[in-house]
Length: 212
Length: 84
Image (tube, chains in turn orange, brown):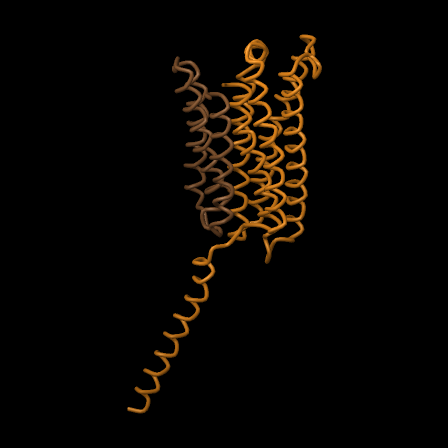
């Protein structure tokens, strides 16, 4: 009798411990959490604001010089813009999958996915450099007209952000290999979110410059 | 936490939307419809990046609304500039 009651009480204690541990595990999942560091999100907001000024400025300039913009846009390669869009979206996917892998503790997979994302991002760099060279070969540069001033200014500014994003992700990849994100992965998430921001900016930039 | 399947589905959706925005330029003759459609696609793509890739779907509401607001207000402002 005594043994039975001891066994029951032990079972109850074990059951309540399981419930507590499950509660503790599930609790953070229910809480809303901002991925990455707060400072990075303020930096992202600042970057988005700067680009917003460029986008609105471009649209206003197009309305004021619509004929010139139509003629100038015809000299661009929409396919190059499309390839760059697909490259950045695909690169963002691999970065998102890399974050997922580091969450699961799969360091090797995370690094491999980061490497693939950077290889895909290189497609963007190559196509953009080719596009600039193509325009230069036609005798077009930043001083040709208002459209090309804004085109070179905005796309090169974005190009520099892509380069910065790549440097950040390479740095993160090296740190991941050194085992820096075994406990706290907020630095990893911050870099990833910066990269997605670069992608988001291109998603607005592409139709504005190449399609509309 | 966004799953691998969700991320891949989101990527496919982004690819389809990108191709749709290019196709819209060849199909839609009406300038108002064309610009509205292309900028609506920009919002949908921005929403996918915000919620799935950036994982702000499970973030504090303010941050999610800030990013979604950006991809809604900026294309909306551009649309207004072109159409007004």
